[in-house]
Image (cartoon, rainbow, N blue to C red):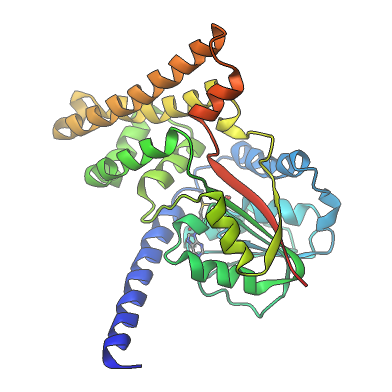
Length: 328
Ligand SMILES: C[S@@+](CC[C@H](N)C(=O)[O-])C[C@H]1O[C@@H](n2cnc3c(N)ncnc32)[C@H](O)[C@@H]1O
């Protein structure tokens, strides 16, 4: 390697490290405030996903699973409860991992480790299942991340990915709000979140979307090509024919954005001094989107549009949830 290449590699490594550090710090703080009930509900979500996808929960018995980017450990704990012989959760966020350990106390088939999915500290082909939910699109290097995830899956084993897709009114709005949030700063937004009185799960999703240092969106063709390039040809889409969470229907989608709106409404007040006008801009952008959704809702209720057609316009394919099999 010549000096120029060496310098380029070091710079890339440095920017990757600082991005990972910022990501780890952001997420570290987001899981702790979940109370027991909210956390249990988030574990329950894993089981309901399996049911919706008609995936046999008994499959987990005696399996070895990696929860890559485990956050506060909800999915690791769910897999361990289903009887996996060993579940390992890795993440960059030290406090999130400590929360996960606390919540998994007394379970002997789940462990947590601070590690990056860009350098997974395990040998090749050791896991029956690698679960990676909401992580790929925020990593510093998605190609390398996918290489690593693919490397540690056993032949014939599964890789589950959840990533943001390209459609729906939510993402352009988030893209518009991210620079405003960056300019306002995390602590000012946190004050507005507190004023708005948002629940800790809403706080987590909005702070995640507004502040994660990198955010990407995947068209299905791109994601399926990335998987096929790594020997994952058989893919089962878990969101085919069903909509989940706030994408269930127009009203849920709107209500979720109204929670986001409440942050900017709270910030658009005297209390926020010179930051008020930036909050006001954000508020107007969210209100415009909410108004558009209301238009579609009334078009449906007046019989001008079918509910499916309206949901395709407003929500579209907002996420990809895919279970892919590694070829033998
Ligand atoms: C949206 S959260 C999802 C957490 C968890 N998968 C869940 O569904 O509850 C994304 C998580 O990915 C983690 N993360 C981001 N980049 C990572 C990386 N390179 N290696 C390990 N974890 C990473 C973040 O720290 C964060 O906890």
